[in-house]
Length: 324
Ligand code: MTE
Image (cartoon, rainbow, N blue to C red; front, side, top):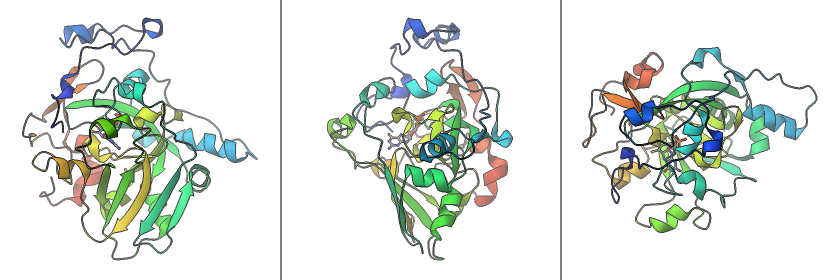
C-alpha cells in the first residue's frame, strides 16, 4: 500500500497514550520487540451496550440511539481490543501515513452537518443527512474482527446498520451490479491530500451487489458505543469484515449504483498488490509479505489469520474461488 514511504506496518516506535491514561500496562509489547512502550492500553470496552430506546425522543434522541444500538449477540466477542488502540492507530491517508498521527491531524475536519448522496441505477435516488439515517435505519452494535492487508488485526465494536437496509430504501434497478462510494474531498481540512498529491483523491471503493447486500456489510456510525471518531471515518463509513481493511472506506459522501466493476483507489494506485475483491485469504501471500498470520494491536500477539477473516460461513458461498 505504501509506495512512497517505508512500510509503516513496521510501526514507528512512538508512544500514543499519555501516562495519565494508562490502565493495565501490557509489557508484552516490549517483549514483542516493537519498542511500543506507549501502547500501554487497558480498561477496554465495557461490553455490550444495552441502552433502552427512550419513548417520545426528539431528533437528538434519535441520533443518540442511532449511535448506541443494542448489541447483536450473533456478533459478539470477548477479545475486544482496547478503545485507545482502535482510535489511536489508524489508516486514513487523507490525514497522515503515520498511523499514530492520524488522530492528531483530524482537528479541522468538519463532520457535521453531513450528507450522503445515493445515486446511479436506483428508482429512488436520495440525499440523506445524519438525522434522516437515524430516523430510517435501525442501528445495532456488532463486534467484528478487523484485518488490515498490512497483517495486523483488531477486534472492534461498531454501531451501525446493514448496508442492505439502505439499499432496499433506494430500490436499485435490475441492471445495478456494483456499488461504488467516495470519501469526502476537503484538502483544506485533510492535510494528507495536500502532502501526497500523487494519489488519485478522493478515496474511492466498491463492492459487487451481492457483497453489498450481504448481511455482514455494515454502515458504521459509532465505535465503542460512542459516535464514530473522526480518525475512524466519522460520521459514516463502511465495514466489510471479511475483506482487507482498505475496502472499509471512511467518511462516505456519495454512493452510486453502477453496471460495471468500478475502479478502486488502491487497485488503481498499485494494481499488482491490491485487488478489487481483497477477500482475507491466509493462503495467498501479498507480493511483499505473508498473509498467513496477523499481529493483534496493541499486544502484537501473532494469530493465524482465518480464511475470510473468520466469516466464511456468511460469505464463502458468494465466491467461485477466482475472486481475490
Ligand atoms: N478510507 C479512506 N478514505 N482513506 C484511507 O486511507 N484506509 C483504509 C480504510 N479506509 C482508508 C480508508 C485502510 S488501509 C484501513 S486498514 C482502514 O480504513 C483502517 O480503519 P481504522 O483506522 O478504523 O482501523
